[in-house]
Length: 141
Image (cartoon, helix red, strand yellow):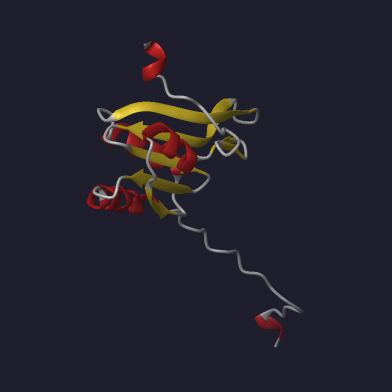
């Protein structure tokens, strides 16, 4: 009888691509449906992580993370984080992007998640001025 309620794990070849879980495959396995996906890139994922963790703390069911230890800073850093939320929702943070996975009737929720993350856009530092060729001092004229 208990076997009836267990999920049967099949075809995990696509689940573990790269160094962590492939989130779209994980969503399909977890919720037994295909996700709608929204994406935002070029964001600071540390700030985004703190925001999501605080804003959705009562909706978070699980957090899966791939982390690594950086010797120079003597601390753990994360590459990927997957937030599993209630109502068949997931949020993945990785590298410099966020993917929001949701059901077809949750577009407004997903759009709001991305709009909240716009504030964490990575701003590129102004490049240093480079001199090409021969540089002359103005006083030499």
